[in-house]
Image (cartoon, rainbow, N blue to C red; front, side):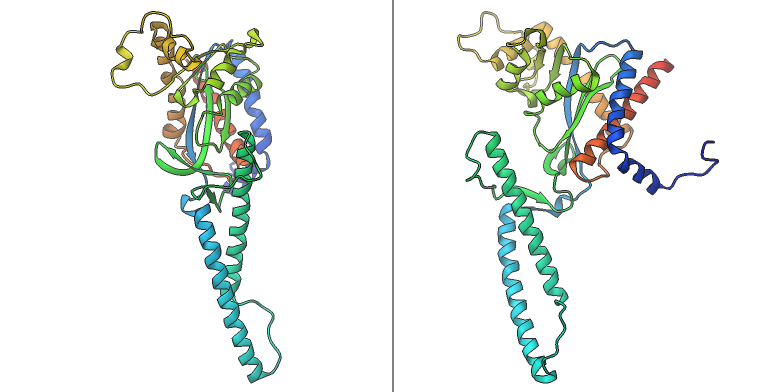
Length: 342
């Protein structure tokens, strides 16, 4: 009606999304605030998880650091050989036609030199990543070198090779925190890290930033479990900011959840991971943690299976984060509409 029957071209919609990606990302917070207010929801226990989504890039366009070194040497030799051939051809033409000659590089040589330049740039990126990783771990950054298996994708350099439910994919790790009342996404982000270990604390801060509330408890699988994460949730320096954790410490064996919790005090020197393991073996711990799979996993199912979103359309982490925010925004609108209808 508003467009008088005219349908916008798909390119128009695509360009609109690209141009306004940052505004759409902020819109997620506005819609979330409205949804929480409409439902009079106070964040209690929030379930956190990540899902691997394909990037708009093929894993076959990735090259390992070890392969780069081999290919760089091979291309250097090929360029040298082609230059020798070109020089010999130039001398023969000069003898036949005089000293006049064209100044364009042969197509075969130009193609190899272009590939060589791209590989050199990719090596620099992997070397910088290795230095950044070493610095973050408190190791000597200057001497840090990439491993031969470290990969770089030429189509979307910020994406990574990671293992997902569909096998090995070139993609991103999309994070979402979900509240249990309306299954609203109350915190979301995208990372290029294949594992979730380093995502717990950033996601807690994002939940508070995006929803305006600090959750009382976090439920997460064993991918988020570490001494550092459990210690940070306790916030011993700021008791008022403490978040109760229900975080799996490892994969359960078949039938293990039916076993009763061990009795008696924990051994002296027990770690926070040991304490968390004992906590989840209690009746209360089991019941609380069991709710996680009924909260966050259905949301990923709705997004990936019901709505068919399994691959990002944009490239680069910044644009992908905006695309994921837009997807989470529409999920919350659908959940709010469903709640109002019922």
